[in-house]
Length: 172
Image 1 (tube, rainbow, N blue to C red):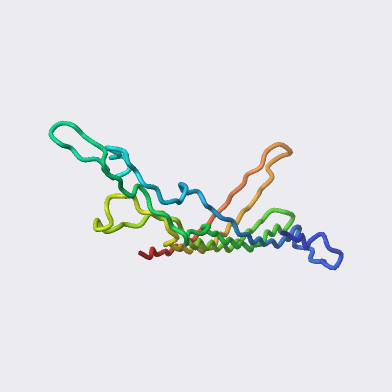
Image 2: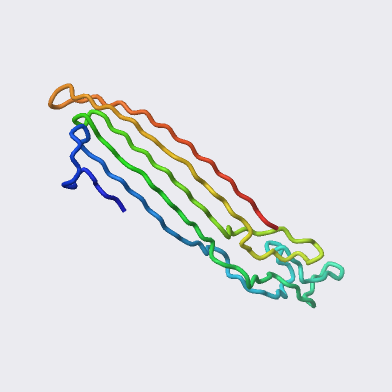
């Protein structure tokens, strides 16, 4: 959402040609994981799934057993991303100078990871779980100068400063 203050009738600053303030907030989700269900395998060899339900007698494999091929996670939830941004744009002195500033923040909760399981639980793959969180925040500023050389040419100079800090953790 944005508001161009310089278009308002009450805004009477001769040196400022354009002034806009803006902000946004949004929440999105991610559930991009394999189906979460418990499965029993009777395949003789399913090494790609990490289990072996068969037995070998001599050189002949036989499938007289079963094993858990995957675990389910009833507590699995959507990964949530909350994003916030606020800033302003200003041009002044006959649009020769410009300045833009932004502050942003992004928080992700319930990051989807596959935790490590103890081998005591067998060789089935662990279910995906919501075990991570990250936070990212920072600011960005841009200062510009525009010089008209002729009707068809102009020089533009810009300087950008950016800072970002990220932190995160993973529970197991």
